[in-house]
Length: 456
Ligand SMILES: [Zn+2]
Image: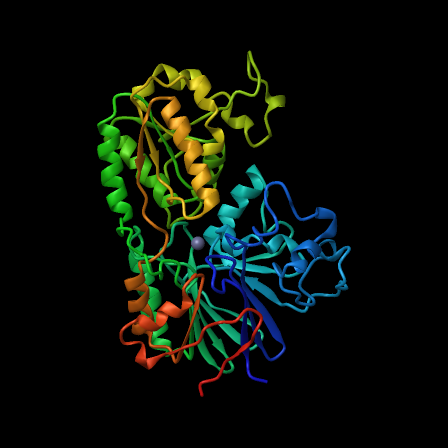
């Protein structure tokens, strides 16, 4: 039998990548994430899948593929599928975003996970300060330059630039020929040249198949392609132009963005204050010799949420929070030096503002993606209500984690694979508009339908 690739997610949707790659007797899953819309027609904050049914309530709506020898005993309780020893040999991850890792919790922990060294460090931080999707799995780590084999397949991980460190694409040598999978990528972050490295290496392999993301391949990719550097320049300008407090919301594991705001704070003579969760991540990432991150305590301070009145007591805090109690800063501390602080505050921590007592006239920077669905629009309204309540200016500043449509087109045409499979996009059909695609045939994926891998 020819090797084959089956897409079980990321088909006509952004996120939810779940690709099964089979060659001879070896089965490998490339990513196993949650889609952004995944099941929102059936489940919401008021109707959730029943935990006691394991994966059963998700099987009902086709939100998880019914692959035998994949799921844990717990995931299969109360389902029609019988638990059996693993038939899938490994999960291989491109990066640590939820839409690529979110469903791993259902997988049999006997199946090992292959991921980048940085991804493993990020996961350690999440395990320490909350929960980890990789909990219980043996984790095998790689870096660019490494190769690893799974059965007849050889994997060559190649770094790419994305909005989380430790993101990879893969060149995979199968018995049917070489294939390439981009994962998520962009060119306009601080490590844009890494994506160029991937293109160069992929082009050299003359792949028979290219699986590529196309988040921004859409009829209305009109948003300006703000680079991370442009975010830094604009954020510095905004912070310098503010007399009172500046606080900002952005994704806590976007290390480029952390560095951007740290630099903006330094430039304007302010002190950046981060959450305890971000502090744990920064402490862990110190071990990564390729990354530069602000040092906790030296470069940035840590915000301590008040969990009781009076003197803080260790017993009120989780063990991972305790080291920060003595050296952290409180709402009162920030309230007293508002014009000297740049605070990272996630929206779910906005009630802290009640204790910080911000003086009117400060600035809030929403350094995250603009709302793209109803739920996001509702959140945006609530955020804006809070900003209006404290009398702050609202600034929107963000660089996407994904390449612009034109850049995706250049990558696809440049690599010139025999066939191209667009994933992680709502508009796979739009790939046919890429000028020069002539060399590559477009193969639109169908969920659950195997694509045979052969040079012919
Ligand atoms: Zn991503």
